[in-house]
Image 1 (tube, rainbow, N blue to C red):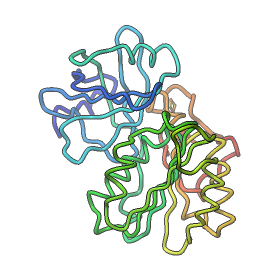
Image 2 (cartoon, protein in one colour):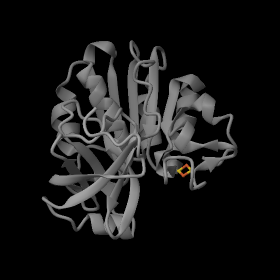
Image 3 (cartoon, rainbow, N blue to C red):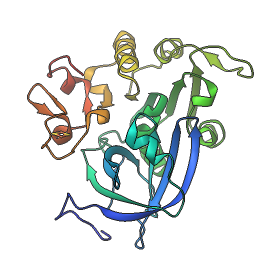
Amino acid sequence: MPNCNCEKPLVPCTVEVIDIVDETPDIKSFYVKNENGVPFDIKPGQCAMVSHIPVGEGMFSCTWQEENEYLQFAIKRTGLLTDELHTIEIGQKLGVRGPYGNGFPVDQCKGKDMLFIAGGIGLAPLRSFIKYCFKHREDYGKIQILYGSRSAADLCFKAELFDLWPQIKDTEVFTTIDNAEEGWDGHVGFVPSYLEEINPDPAGKIAVTCGPPIMIKFVIKALEKMGYSDEQVITTLEMRMKCGIGKCGRCNIGSEFICLDGPVFNLAQLKKLPPEW
Ligand code: FES
């Protein structure tokens, strides 16, 4: 593992921003590396702490990259730290430490058809798992991706969604936006109702969802109505990850610490927690 800080998990590694991509009006992707490439290995669904001195630091999902040449974070503007991060330029330095969290159960899902359901910035953590499935395409069955956002401009990763992923064998991509707008001739409507229209058969399938909490709740209801069992539904509560090491007490639901036990859970595990998620 290159230049890993596992023995000193609170000490960030310095990385350089090597590329920045405007994904939407309020989401940018930051590509970072140090002289060794990636400062630590990361699995799909894991997070890392990004520090921007002197503003502060925050936990973000980090996209697994098959090449291990850089780490990528898709960061939405939501406050002081993210506003400042959106002002940085290529060549500037950031700190990163990690990885944190359990990540997606990529091995347990082998041999299954995969259904990914995301809303807004929720596609960022799922994209790690999607890219992993495409890298190991022979290990997974049919792949369906349902993704929605408020408007066409708010759809992330457009090149992959519209050009790359639909070309991959046994893959279907469904996109939707909340309200009709000029120039959009695709589906209009919320993700959970589009999911019910598509009505994907639960046989042999694992559904993985991430997005706004209200979307997740209605997606889960729709999946249950379609006959998905609690073990067939996986989500990530990565938005609750703060310190990532069980110290700040800001992520717990009942007695469970999301950062220590998650952030990835299946529905059977979540139903054992108080209904605060
Ligand atoms: S994120 Fe701080 S205790 Fe879990």
